[in-house]
Image 1 (cartoon, protein in one colour):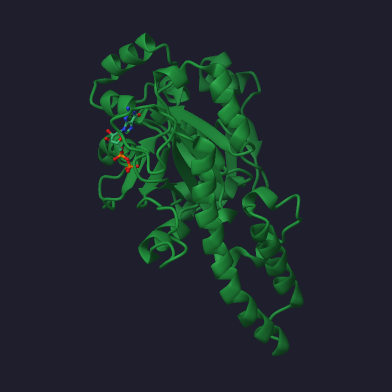
Image 2: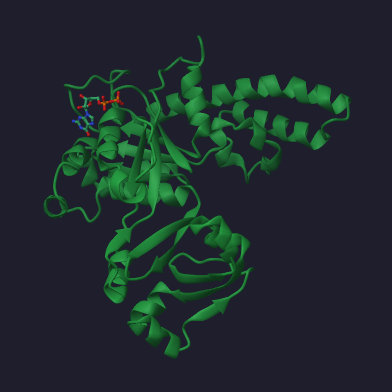
Length: 360
Ligand code: GDP
């Protein structure tokens, strides 16, 4: 499944945040038989629609979608000059589908900053430079190989052109992901290289109360990393929050004047950044959110429940979540003509409430 890898300088709060995530990991409900690696944390995607569905269908269990995070060791400035980023680090980060960069914004004289001062923009540049240098090394190895393959007519010249264009982007200090459109990069020819900076980024600004309450400062930081998304949280606060019961946590959030926990925000932004969406199923047993890609068809969505559902797909009965809630019941939605019958070419929409019909 898709995962998001954490990177960042030492002492920015990665372990603190990751420990909070690990404590939230929902082994019980969704993954009764799965073994989860110690460096993987799974966070529920908060979804109020499931509560509503459970009311309508009398569902006993709620199963939200989840987002997986992987803890990757810290990047140290200059890593690329000596041995390069460690092999284990590179292997882990290559497997991630997106990168969450933890950036220190919190002030605390007791916690030493590796560069001596709090400077988010300089920290981001340090990390991105390391990732860019790693990608340049990848290209430096790949280009001579591809040139040889072109001579032997085993590869098309377009592949080399795409790699040279990517190299030019990196050489001027930009990431691949942020240059896909401006430089018309032919990503299909770069896929196999698994370039680190071709992955979508999220910036997690580990903040203190002062920053969290300072809208102008947050806007400034968000603008700095746009179009990548920014998440603002207090890792220490989050690690305290996960120790509390659901009610206590809600109360503590309200007292802090926050609508959403940092963890919920991180899961929501991560889910979006991975290009995912959910559709819903509901019955007396459970109300459940299923994870699919944006742009998936109905049979692909059915395949997430079971491969047989995809193979034997006949049709889907679909009602949008809003229409269902407005109608108050499935029968009433049907009476109002809101229940649609959709075929194999139907493109799923976020929040579709679905029942699949299939042959076995
Ligand atoms: P890592 O090296 O990036 O994994 O950083 P750690 O999670 O180990 O954090 C480094 C130090 O900063 C620890 O002493 C944490 O308790 C502290 N720390 C982490 N997050 C926060 C925060 O949000 N506020 C403050 N004041 N301290 C924090």
